[in-house]
Image 1 (spheres, one colour):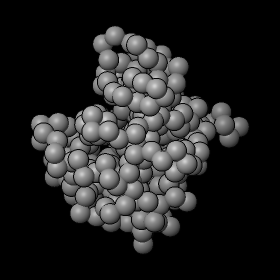
Image 2: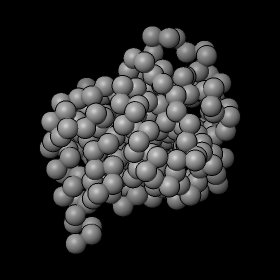
Image 3: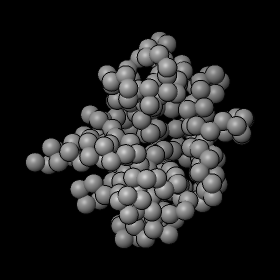
Image 4: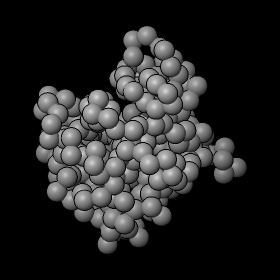
Amino acid sequence: MIGLILAAGNNTRIAEHLHYSSKVLIPIGGRSLLIRNMDLLSAYVDKYVIVVGKAEADIRTEVEQSSYSNRVMYVRQEVASGTLDAVRLAMSCVNDDVFLVLGDEFLINDRIDKMVDDFNNRDLDVIVGIIPNSDDCFVKDAYTLHYESGFVDKFVEKPKTIFNNDRGTGYYIIGKDVLKYLSDIDSKKKDIIDLFNYAIENGTRTASFQIAEEEYNINTIQQLDRAVNAFNSIID
């Protein structure tokens, strides 16, 4: 399995405010979000592919100071044009199942090991990490899932009306056969869930899994504070 980490997003006000060139370099508990996500995948992936952008030099420096430097390949995304484009760019380095991670996310009490087991034991094509029973406001800012007979039959991005409080995260395991659909999808499509919806329409088996107790997308100071407080409550 290959660990694919998307880290090409443009610098945002939170990163600039904290004097980092990328959100993935923001530390929690002394380790950057990037390295923490590499830690999560380390037992399950043979190599990492990191999609980088303007902060490439700083990201390379961060990785070179870790124990993962000899397991990493980099792909440059010149314009941050969406997660689907980032995955397309990475395909030249991918020839296996993929554990895809959005690099600016952070998990509390993760269950990565059980998610990998579920993917393997249920003969799935895609498995997506979720946080169930989420507040409506968080679901509306992310995406949710519709189910049929125990499997996902549709991903709905930023739903206007809440019909399911399973909040999708940026953690996915994708079978290599699903990636062949990338060339079939309209180039105007920008989000990775567009790939999943297309794959479902073509008969793939997709399921969800509670990946952690909580997940934080570090887009604001408030989200960072919540993540740090949650982390500190674990180690106290």
